[in-house]
Structure formats: structure tokens, C-alpha cells
Image (cartoon, rainbow, N blue to C red; front, side, top):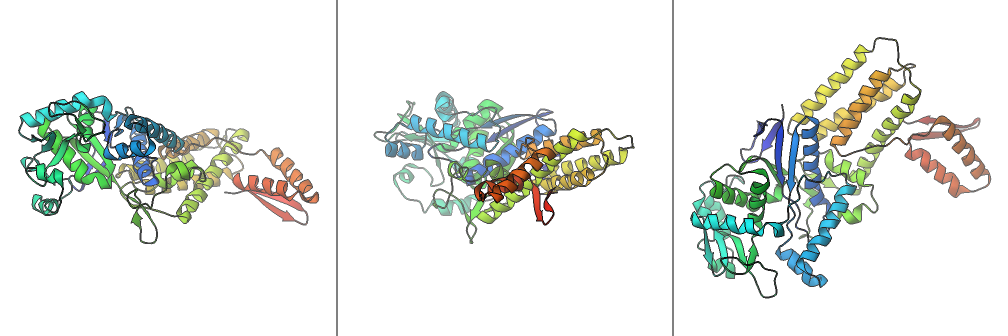
Length: 470
């Protein structure tokens, strides 16, 4: 039984889908004006892992994640780059797809774009105006926040607390509002900006309305899960609830999920473009194995913050290599294994117990940290089992199936690259010859290859000995 921590109720709740066996998920995607940084990637990876676990548990998942392709930041980027706003969006959508593919993120079922939904957005806003939840002011359209009685429930804030903060804002836009708390649904176009025609004048949508429109259009008036980064809880998701429920009269989302930040530095500062302390995925995967970055991100429980540093990345790389070594050892032994005549029911029972524990941990609000601990235990179990003189192929097949399935949930996919004994002996002989010829570059290259494959070399007076790391 999967339980989800619901931000709206601040409790773990049993997951009950709207349609049995199906999950409708909407996860806020990027504003495509630059490469994503690893803080952005945290959300993408967290919800991809959650999606994969739902699929492992037998659910059919419809996963919708949008691209915000018109925004103030995109307009500024277009001016800086000397191209149009749509060209900026196209460029960085392609970059997003390339970077997330490298991180083994499964493409969304749908990736809707704002520019493709203008008629839907205009219609949505018009309904809010007709219902008295929105009003036009000199080409802008604003939402009457106080009309929505539950405003602030998601972020656990009272309307009075919000009013204090809103009353301190200044600017031309604030002068047009009936109330400082009101937010924009439609923005009047400034000279030179991209725009669309509307009943209220040329302009473009506000940020919050976009997700309400795309979520309800593609998943229905009530959706199972709405997710995103912790920073979107207020005001973005709060505003989405107000807009959507005012328009439909229905509960917008049954479960709200928010992932924690990526922090950096000794003070654990949130990574963000506005603070200038970010590292883009595009840059990072030039020097760090994308699988290591994926493993680093995916194996922390999604609601907890992740502390980024060279040390934590190095630790992730070491742990991932150990899991890879186990996979290679299993594939190597499997090639030479024969079905044992001994009763293997006790070993199958041990695997069943591990599987039950893995599901229990992951069912508990997708606790990836505890889930990967069970994967480590399975790796240890496999290494111990492989030391037996005889192993059972059915047991080995079951164990490696579980191992591969669980790693796939975390976005990790291994291919067998184990060196055979004869290959190792040949390479050791080549290394010895290279050392005698003082070709230390080749000698070091072979040593590094062995290290990468989890093979330990020991130079003794009797010659070079080797063993596989377990």
C-alpha cells in the first residue's frame, strides 16, 4: 500500500487513484530560457523515480510535465541573444531533452507548451471573469484572491499574513489591482514584446494560469498527483488551486508532492540561478558520469534536501561502482553456472524477504534512501552467494532480475562488461611487458581499466595476482 505525504494536509495518506490501476501526474516543468542546473534536475529526477516506482508496482502512469515557453526571462534572453522568444524556447527545450536523456529520465507522456494552449487559456480566464473571480484593468486581468475562501491552505498561511507581505509591494502593477494580494492572469503587452490577441487587448498569460489550463486539459478537472519543487508551493501552486477550483468547482489535485532543495556550500545555501551559485547539468556531465549524478539525486528521499559537494559526488560514484562490480560478477558467474540439484527454496525465500522489505520502504512515501539500502543488501547477498562452489541458475536469475528492476527505478542501467579470466591474464602479461619496456603510460592505462572493472592487482615476488572486488 503506497502512502504519500500530502503537502495540503501535511500528513501521509494512503494513495487511492481516481481510476483503479492508473495514475495521473502533473509535474511543473522548466521555464526554458537557459540550461537547467542540478537544482532543477533534482525535481525532474525525483518525480521520474516516483513515476518508475508506480510502474514497477503495476500502475499505468500518465505523466504530464509542461514547458513554460513564454515568460519575462525568455523575453529578456531573446533580446540578449538577438533571436525571437520562440527560438529561445526551442533551443533550450532541445537542451533539456538532451540533458535529461543523459540522466536516464523517461520522457513525459506529454510535454505541453504554453504557446500551443492560448485558446484554452483565454477561455479559462473568461470563465473566471464571468464567475466574478477575475477582473480586467487596463489590459491586464487579475484574480480576486480573497474570493477563494481556502487561499493559503497549501502553504499553511493565513490571508492576514499574506496581506502584510503583499501590502509592501510597489509598482505600476500594484496600482491597477483591487487588492495587493491579487495576481495576474493576463498581462498587457509592452512595446516590442511577443503577444497574442485577447478580449482585453494584446498580451500574454501570467505564469500561474498556464499550469491550471494544461493540467486540467490533459488530466481532467481533478488529478491524482500534482508535483514540483518546494519553491513552487507558494505562490505558484497556491494560485493554481485557487484558479482551478474557482473555475471547475472541483478539487484540483488529491495529492500535492514537493521535492526538497539542492544546497551548496558550508552554509547549505539553496542552489538557484537568482543567487548565482548554480552548476548546469550541461556543464557537469562533461566531467561527471551522468549515471553518477542520477544516482546521487535519485537515492535521497525526495522531500529531503540534498547537499551537493565534490565529496558527496565522489561518494556516489564509489557506491555506484560497487553496485556495478556486483552486476559484472553475477554476469561472469552466470555464464559458468550450472543448475544445482540442491534444494534452493531457502535462498528463494531470502530473496522474497528482501523484495518485501524493498516494497515496504518504497511504499512509505517513496523512501529512496531506505530503498537503496535494501539494494545494497541484495548486492551483499549476491556477492556471498557467488562465493559458493555451486550456485543455482533459477536463484541467480531471480536475484539479478530483482537487482536490475530495483536499480532501474533509480534510473540506473548496467550492461555487462565483465572481463573473462583469459582476458585478465592477457592484460596482466601485456602490463608486465609494458613495465619492462618502461611504457608506464600503457601500464597505468591497464591498471586503471582493472580498477574500473573492480579487479584488484597484487604484485608479489611470485608474480602478479588478481582478484575481483566484492
